[in-house]
Image (cartoon, rainbow, N blue to C red; front, side):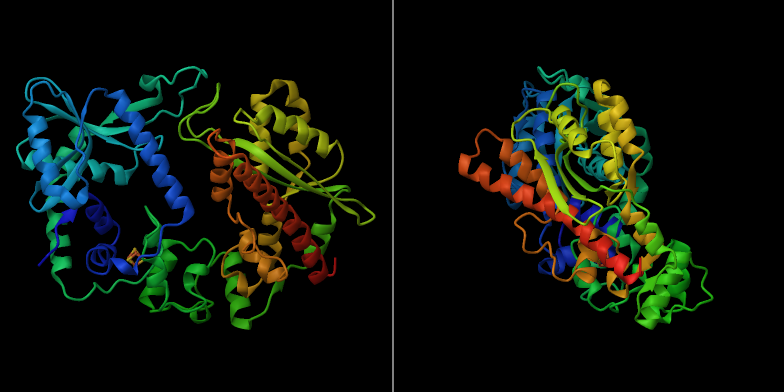
Length: 492
Ligand code: SF4
C-alpha cells in the first residue's frame, strides 16, 4: 500500500525522490538531528507561537499527527462554528495528502486566509511550494481561499525594548495568484511521488549537490557511505557543469578526474594532492605567515543571533557578540591569554567592545580564522559611535588565517574542508574539539542563552560559563598552533 503523503514528505520528494522513498519506507536510515537543526526547529516553534498572538483568539487543534483523522474532525467543527475566526494547526486531507495549516483566518463571507509561518526574513522558493501544496488540499476539499501566503519576520523591525510590536515584527507576503497557477504542477508532482512510493526498491539516485539544497538531507550519511573516500564533491567550489561532466564520465573519485577537466587553481591542487597523497605548500606561505606584526593577537568571537529581538535597538537575527578570546604572542615567544564573557541577560555589545579594545591595544596583527570577526567588529563600530574610530583602526589590523591557508596549503586529509575543526586534527593531532563539553559555535550560542536564563540554577550557570570559556579559548589556541605548524612545514 502506498503510504499517505504529508506536506513534509511532499517537500522531501521535491528535493529528492530517494529522500521521499526513505522517509516513507526506511525512516530509520536517517541520522539524528544535529544540534543546529534542533536549534532551528526550536526557534521555528517559538516564532510560530508568537505568530499566533498576531492572530489572537483562535482555536487550537490539539490532536497531533498520530491522530490526524481526529484532528480533521476537530477542524471541521471549528470551521462550522460561526464564532471561530482563527484556527491554529487546522488539519485536512485531500487526495491522500495530509496537511496542518499554521493559521487559518476567517476572511470576508465564506472565504478563509491561509497563513504559513516561517522564521526567516524572506520568502524562499521552497516556502512557495509549502503553501502551494496546502492550497491544493484546501481548495480540493472545497474551502474557499482568499489570501494564501507566508508570514515571516521583518528584518527592518527595530525593537524598542518595551513590548514587541507584532504588526511590525511580522510581514505577510500573499502568494495566492502564483500558487493558484502552480496547481497543475502540484498535482503532477503528487502523482509522480505516488509512483515512486509504490516501488518496492528505492529509486537509483546518487548523493550529490542536491543533498544540501534547500535542506541538509537526513539520509546524507547513509547515501555518502558507498562513495569513495576522496569523493569528487570534495573539490572546493565544484560547479554544476563540472559535476555534470564528471557524472557523464561516471567519475566519483577525485583520483579519476582527468587533468583536462576545466578546474580552478584550488581544485587542481586538491586533485594533485589526493593523487600524490602529499601535502601542498605554496612557495611563499612561510613568508606570508611570518609577515605579522608583534604582538600577534589571535582573536575569536562567539555570537548569538536571536530570531526574536531580545534587547532594545536590535533587529530580528541581530548578531550579538557575547564572548571573545585573545591569545597574544609576543616577539620573544611568550604566549598569554585574555578573555571576556558576558554573564548577564543584557545587550553585551558595549562591554564586548570596551574590553576588547583594551585587550587589543593599538599595535600588532589581529589574526582571525574567517572574515566573520572583522564583520563583528565592523557591526560594533556602526552601533557604538563612542568607539567608532578605535574599532575602525582595529579592523585594518585584521588578517584572515583561513584565507591564507586556503591560498597556500592543502593536505589530502582536509577532505575539501578548511574549517578549523577539520584541519586542526590533521595539523595538530594532539588537539581536538571532541574532548570539550561545547564543540561547535551553534552549541555555544545555545549554551549562552541557557546561562543567562534567570531560571537556570547557579551551579549550572557556572558549569556553562567554564565550558564556554574553554571552547572559545580552544579556538584561538588552535590558531596559534596551526600557524606554528604551517611555519614549520613551510620553513618560515
Ligand atoms: S542524501 Fe541525497 S541522494 Fe540521498 S536521499 Fe538525501 S537527497 Fe537523496
